[in-house]
Image 1: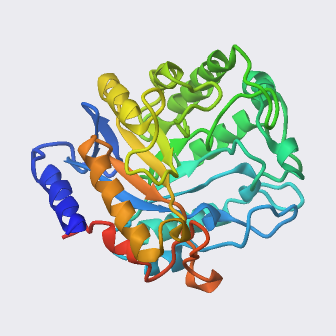
Image 2 (image 1 turned 135 degrees about the vertical axis):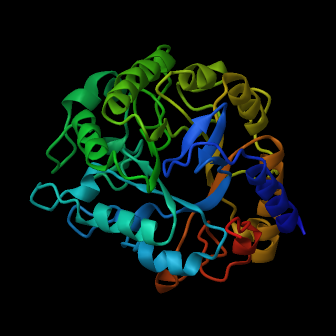
Length: 356
């Protein structure tokens, strides 16, 4: 019942759009609303972080999961997919650039009418070629100048140069809905270390520089920062709003792993973020939403909780939700002890089909 009501609400938004609006294949923002082909684009979808994984050493990114195969199993409620576009994943073991997996992934997305959120870097060591969590963590110093100067192990370019390359290559591809600069950025002094007093300013300076770089190359794709949003170093309280006020950022992000329907408190909670972004006139999406079935009593209970979350998010004006994370049948599918979602999972029935 909740799923049907949510679908009805979302479809009614789309029907209200003017038929004379711009018929663009690129997702854009108009008056704080995501738009696609002249209609509001309110989406649900999935994280498939390993869709672009390769097997070249060093391999810290799990087994590859082809988007083409996953899309055949998703069901009609998946309209968008968030995945990694990290430099390591477009680099051969001998350090040469290889776009093959990215090209194939975008082709598969287009064939299945999916939009892609492409994340350009990781706060964490995973999938970027580092030998340890400590080595790969992006510190305050990385956000200050390391992103311009340092090259990850076995990779030919700095983060800033990588962003220029990948955005230039795909700037004309409307399959990409949005770039995100970093997955879950924060600016502590070291992995697990203290938060410096200038962390928020360092993140804002980084965003101003790289965000403007992206927009100079590519004015048609949307851009987001990729924040967790619940009080991390440099984005706590009003710092989150100040960061997302940057003119290069079009969409704000929040990650929800809470067992509460609406997570967080009055300073860093999702409802607070939704009100702040409404005031800024920028869409807010939940880039990751995850619930472990064993923590709530099983798969059906997870599906019910996520249905309640989706409804509450829509009521707050949140314009997209992406579940964490897809695990194909070939890898075992849904896992009751983890966040994995696979074919036939009852949570898929809670994602509204907006295609009809």
